[in-house]
Length: 111
Image (cartoon, rainbow, N blue to C red; front, side):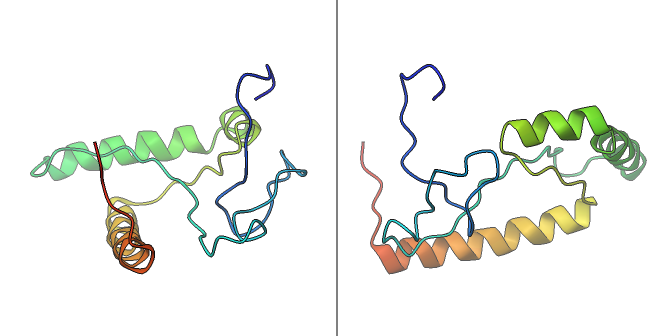
């Protein structure tokens, strides 16, 4: 966006982002959609519990680093460190939200 090759139209969050205060939300543009994007690190099903605990602890430690958190926020990403159980519950809720959004809007996948 800063180079002028891409123009942002709106953010998908409930409120405007402090890093982009002049960029309206989709709701402000008339679309009844709120969907903050997210990303997560996942492990294969059946991963050994001890391995999962070690990975989770390392990720949580990294996410507690002030420099890393500041960099994420510069990129308009709000970092969070959740347990594997919290992440799984979030993903289940997100799937339900997206299923409802697709049904309500009639979004279709095309090639």
